Image (cartoon, rainbow, N blue to C red):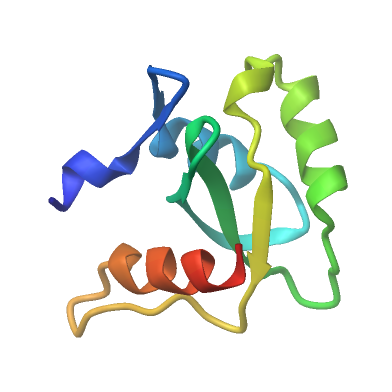
Length: 109
């Protein structure tokens, strides 16, 4: 299930979580980011940006979406949810545990 879930399926369209992550890493208020899929009855899945803010920064979902819009990303790829964390959960080897983030996002959705 690992890499397969790096794709968000919204209204039948496959959206790359990595594409969104790569763009969000360019935002000065973002230190770390992981984008995960959250189930949604209407569109199938929504995108949730799990953010570790840069020191002193307090990014908002609206701010990040405006930034992504300025990067000319398709509007259907914009995240609908955001979780702010002190750190991303990682394995001993440093890989982000997206299954933990998906569960947390599902609970907050």
